[in-house]
Image (cartoon, rainbow, N blue to C red):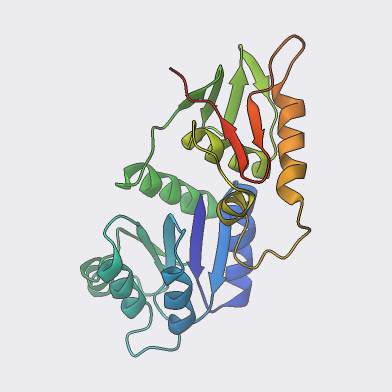
Length: 226
């Protein structure tokens, strides 16, 4: 899943990016209202973490929140701010925020709020995924096949999760990059091929079939359970 973080303090933004990245999320970071709205309009985000006091618009983060809500009701917004008065909280919620976290906050609480909002989102998919004998639990970040626990890196988990959420469909390399890597990714062109190879090695035990199918020139797929 991809999260848009809007935070103008470079130190805080870096900590949030690292924390979310280690939890397996792809993260885009913007530091002003105009750049945040432009990146959001490009699409593909599942949640917005939004600082209230950002430059570039008269209402700061409130204007960004209203922009998000004018576009969709489905993407949750978590406001982050040092302004923790009742008036500020009410104003943020009235602007369309789904939750409100006052700085300073513990990173474990931030991750818990993120998970809760994603679970409650109208866009939320089934919490536990099943395909081709594989069970994937995004809440616990665990994957099993035939009762065997599969040790996946955060990026491997993200790629497999997206394939399983779209089981039966052919997913292109560019679509996987959009989902599992942030918008500033400029790494080597065969990164998806590399991670598919990693996944195949970990998912396929002795005597087991390869569950990831390659469609040359089109992408990859995992068959949906019948």
